[in-house]
Length: 111
Length: 117
Image (cartoon, rainbow over all chains, first blue to last red; front, side):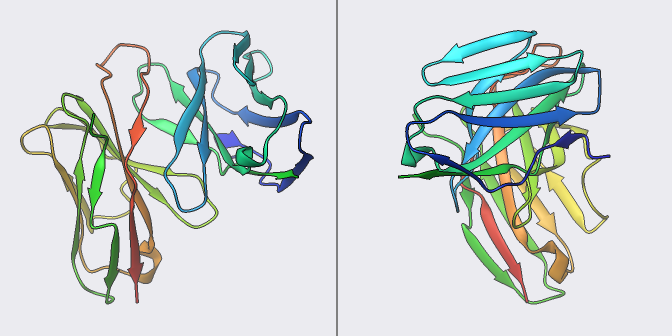
């Protein structure tokens, strides 16, 4: 079982709709959770971080964390064509400095 | 301010050749990470430095891979006797994180795209 699992997609969402991206992780000792966006041929860019259960909102983005279910999600409201990218879920464990990434979900916003 | 820079941006190597990839982290960042990203995959952790100390090298795939950061700033990832399976993008990231502090943002460089023929 991979430590961080994501559906590779592609996930196609109409422009203006809500895109929902999901991620599960295997290690209950994970303490920090991240969503990175990666455009084709570019390096990952952090868009959200979340550390405690519940929701965290930043503009059109909402990260949701459920540690009991070992589940992290990212919602993108009012999806724009510029949101088309690969979204990487990443987790960090207590007293461990490295970040473990999932394979990423390709998101395609249909104009 | 300047971000993380990496050089070269592209490298083509013949199988068996040695290569050296350079990373210049953000000034003052104590932590530096190397990742390997194969096509269609997420970044895979290779190794981590805090200042000049290499605290974790558990992700290095073989003893052909070696990393150093002798003065706690610039880092070099060296791959000896390159193989075709080493073809990937090598990403460097830095953060201001100190050990024991909740994870700080890692800022990624543009990567070095390595192709081994």
